[in-house]
Length: 285
Image 1 (cartoon, helix red, strand yellow):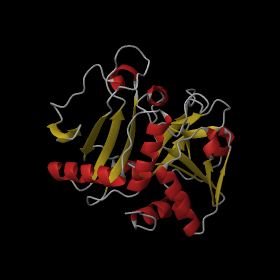
Image 2 (tube, rainbow, N blue to C red):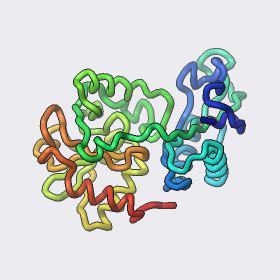
Image 3 (cartoon, rainbow, N blue to C red):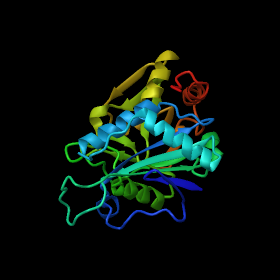
Image 4 (cartoon, rainbow, N blue to C red):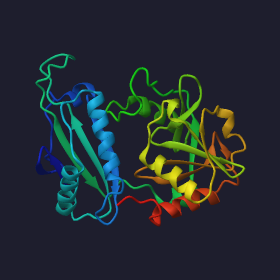
């Protein structure tokens, strides 16, 4: 497979960045992950907007346009003969001149990858995932804006390790005020009495692009949506639960802390929202 490193198409096994790159040294980089369908990326403009927001917020001297990123993605997909792929755009601050301090002389480095091997197994969609509420809490936005997608992912990794140790597929994280936050890789939704609930943006969550699309889809389907602050107990007696991200789309969670969610199968609202998503009801091609 080919990857794009600073405008050059390189075999993935030969691609590299210097060990002086601040992404390697400090996790000083931002990224966006997205999925292409038939060579097109839905919501690309929103991904680029969020990428630029991360770059601006962390004062990385780089801005990108939707047109430029689209061109790079098309070039990479063609080089790898891919139409349906997982795509990751990474922008590092550049090489360090020594120490943590930013000099302003760094030259950002853009790396883009595309892969057809990172999709979730079909069994997760048909049977659902298992999840546990973990002790690892989400880093609060007062420390690092939860809207920034940075390479420093140790908080999420620690949560997933904790879930794996309990033989669960996914971790459900709380914020430091012990409100439901998100999973290690996506936004969280649950259904009670036909109403769709999801933690609000002030719960230290990532403002997910798929999350936003699902809320739009639910409203179009006449499903009531409530965004708010919810305790762990809110998941008790939930009829359905699912997580969202650009790669998983809408992923059912059918077991939480060892107990079945609803009847232990993907629920009707989860399925109807996923169908609407895939049918293009809200696809922003």
